Image (cartoon, rainbow, N blue to C red; front, top):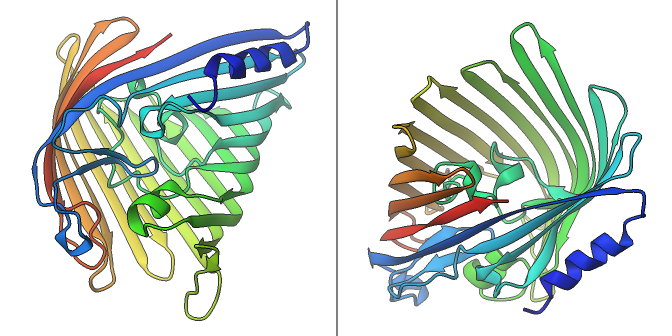
Length: 358
């Protein structure tokens, strides 16, 4: 590893004051899989079939079985400093990054009262329903959050946010208002997969909000974010209509229903970035004791001619064989209908693994 995970953890714990209560928790995924068949992307010189399982971190499978693309190990450290003040850090080592351990989260929290908490630092950008626990595979039914829906280049930000929790009648409410920026000097998805050259991706002037309401069987989550995008390829600014920046607006809606054994998960998202980029996801599952079979469909569609367009149909099973661990197996069928902006081509893939928390 380029960064020693144990040293990073020790540094965090040694830096904590002696009067802080330090709690350590963790999660891990040991996943493996391979491509069964596929077309590749011949127009871009990719002749062999590949399956792009995770867009932001570029987890790709080919025809050789591998355990690296999606396996990961994470630790979260929380130091409670009393009187409403705490500090949180999350360190994740991913197989897709040669298990180089990096800080994904590092922020402080201060509880103003029972309803409001202020946080500042590095956090996950809360665009999607599963954003906050995207890396914790044990938290959801699939092998991974559906890639066509969870697809953007930036997934963290540095800034400040205010969290709200409350109740209205039988409904539990939560909200999040946030602002900040992210400057990814070497964006992996754009550099390694789309452009094949060093690409710096900047999202600045980020302002967003999330509102979520839930009762005993229904959850509804709405989100909106606006930001300014800048991009540099091999050190040169990218221009859009002669300008070196463009404005983006993100809208999202998630509706989840749980009827006991049967559950339905759905998300609709739109990014307006000079053109409209729409993503959709629908999953239906049924719990049979400790076994949960499911079927899922997700798609990405760009409204411009020749733009990016792809969808994935998935079928899988989750088996909760242990109170803190689940075995999963999933078959994915990807249909890449774009040409000028083809992502990874058509493919069929099988993946399986174990997710656990501790």
